[in-house]
Length: 302
Image 1 (cartoon, rainbow, N blue to C red):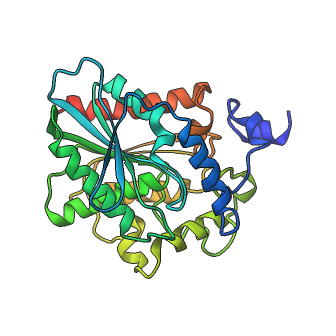
Image 2: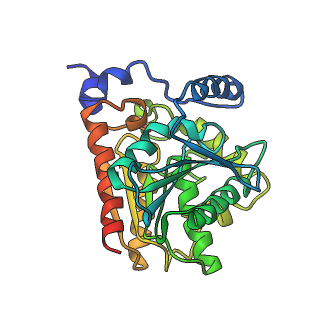
């Protein structure tokens, strides 16, 4: 058994041989965006309602079949390090959430950095949440906010903004390997750099620098905030070979320290975005099932 098979989860080891350690940087940004935009145009969209937001962003709305109204809502935010990605990349995931949960899913197509740095993406997410509360046929008292990677970071930022403004608290923050701390990798490669896939220290520095712009990190990055009390309960899931593993577990511990309920799931040998890249792998299906169960539990408890 070679080093890759020993190190990575068995379901993920073979693809790990060919996946890049980092996906995006200043030189590759345009190429990655071109590829993602091309793939987005190929997505099936007949069952999706698309709306524009006043801020300049947009949403894609998925409704469950046979919904009789009063459906719960999941506001979902895609990943991409704050600099790449489209809402369409998560269409299949959003359909799955809607079908399994009987929920309306509002997927946010937010503006990207560096062209639109903080607070543009967060403003788009906030407007999407406001729109979700006003949709026909939804129960505005049963709303979950969530996202993956940078989308998880934006969901955490949104939870903080909601709390600060005194708006209704969501039932749950569903934070899937969230990007929470600009200090991760800021001093160079991490100790686990050779085991990373898709997102490494270099990509992380580029993503955060692009998103922050002139903003103060202590205000933007959730892991920098000193005031984490009175937030919505959280669920955090991350792989043990994800650059965000340590920052995510540290954030979960800080939430618990101030009395915020936080469930954590760590997938041994899993790297960043494994469930999005390898949707048919058993470990990916199980990870998505955990997410669905966490949201279902939040909906059913209220």
